[in-house]
Image 1 (cartoon, helix red, strand yellow):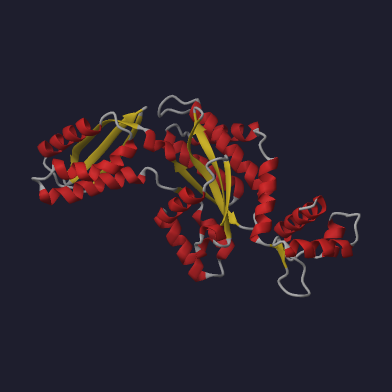
Image 2 (cartoon, rainbow, N blue to C red; image 1 turned 30 degrees about the vertical axis):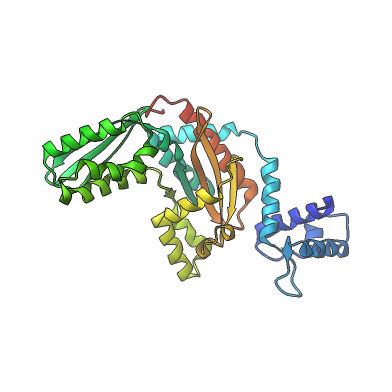
Length: 344
């Protein structure tokens, strides 16, 4: 692509993001006070159309960017970003302190709310670091009639716990807890996910009726830790409020979360801190009008997860990419300064 083609393509996309309308040569020339004539701009537009970066919705209209054009624009922005905005770090810390959030879970949820508040879009987050936690102890205790509290204590200083409606004798729970701890102590949580069903079968082979219920609940609890966390779901109405079928399918995807997690695993760029995913790249029809901007955050220089937003494909990437990038840097800074579960 020539410098002139790049300049005109970027300007067309900026104007399209601003107006949502096809961009004509005269409009472009006047908007940016360009020194070249509208006829020259039209010739360049035709060349960009031939290369697949623009298209013309109908003969008398201006041009709109294709997905390839938007990707080029995004890549250009990603190459240009990278400066740390210390103001966002300060804003985020002030926001967390005013919210009185101290545990990792509370802080993570508060960061997503901050992203939604800052952008007006749906916020998404995944914590990948959980898989690397080392199991210290697995305990099961009766807390009420027909209710069992399952606790998985991990190192460094992280506890997963949940109450399930199960009726089990205390002596049996103690036995299962001891045997599970003996089996999994010192192993990463990722190993627990792979082995726990088989291990529960071995432990409970004489307790057939209880086996399926207990092992299902434990596996559900462990698997849910790496779930996609979502804030600001109502903001999708601003993008597809006129397409009820697509809206229903999208709400289903956001509620189930499994599809989103699989999409992240498949499309996230592991070599870069920032990833932008166009909805069409997901091959999920309900996501086609959207884009996802996500950034990796780290804890003590190790990648720990993702935070990002899902908004309209015609979002202001110049604004959104730096916000997501700097929120991820701020979160990395906050978590790296933490001591165990107590962060602020």
